Image (tube, rainbow, N blue to C red):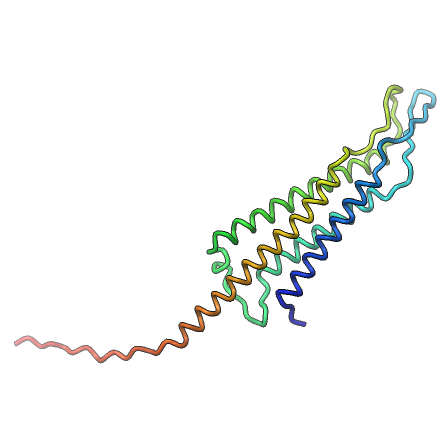
Length: 195
């Protein structure tokens, strides 16, 4: 089934919004700290059951899906017609927004993965030999920031898609104009003979 620009934009936006929602819910469910249970020479940290790690990884997965869909949508041959990549990269605004989309995607992935992985490590490594140790959790605010950057990333991919669509329309109008121009008939050159 052939995709249209509108369908691709809906897919990118939907994946970005889902990633945003998972990231915000993960941030809101993250516990402030674990409960320290002192033992003989050790402290065992008990964390309440929460879906922060799973939601964080789901947010990253949907961010990756949104990014892949956004990147592929730029070079997809809509209506069976493709254009050379050089035509797209000739546009300065397209290149700028493409780089901004890639940068926000990378930053969003970093801000989502960092607290998610550190939260998972806190849960797995819950026995400490330092009796003065508290039971920390991942830094607060990073998941929420990553969620907002994930949404921003999807919006930048949509802007890139709009710029690519405009470049495609311009390219096909230019090629159609070239085909309609009449061919110029030149008379054969006259050879001048010198006496």
